[in-house]
Length: 258
Ligand SMILES: Nc1ncnc2c1ncn2[C@@H]1O[C@H](COP(=O)(O)OP(=O)(O)O)[C@@H](O)[C@H]1O
Ligand SMILES: [Mg+2]
Image (cartoon, protein in one colour):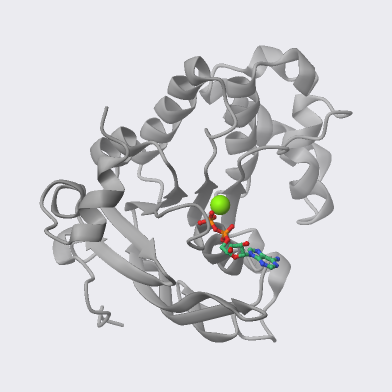
């Protein structure tokens, strides 16, 4: 398959397309939230999904994670049309890691149980396999010593890093991060964004909704800007954030300049 979606940046080279959105539409009643969204994410790309509150970032990510059904259009994960009703939802979810803004960890479970839960219950891994993988991931983020701790014994930043580790359990092809630093104290944002940078360096393919504009500018390979249900911009951070001459785009980014 070749990239045919207008606006797709060829700079990501010939890496395979991990995620392809084709003309996605989604309404809630009369509210047309997504009005024909098309773009690709290639392997190893970090794409920042930007837009005002209510512009449909979370809805789009929920469609990719099958938490919402699209009204029209197709979503391809590799060669799988995940919008096909016959698709195996659990198998697809094991190929996509997800972290939300908050409430990611179960408060009554230890870190290790939180991290292993989905792998064991949904993907039917045995205990030894799940715990070995979880400890490997916790080790990688310097949190192995916290395996037996409970979420309320961790900072918000540590909790989000554990949530990211959990999302990586099944070695997913795509990581969806939906405003994962928005609920954090400002002083805890850095450690979580540093972890995202490390994942990028390791080649993880990431779609992240964020309001951290300087991080998006420096860390994202590409910016997709949503506005009124369509893609207003799709390009490099420089093209979209520094050089766009579109008045609404300029006005949007002007709110984030200090
Ligand atoms: N389950 C739902 N039912 C009705 N309206 C919804 C639902 N989910 C989202 N919306 C509406 O869709 C629009 C986009 O929301 P959302 O995707 O959360 O935007 P963002 O993440 O960009 O802030 C908003 O107007 C929101 O109120
Ligand atoms: Mg949102």
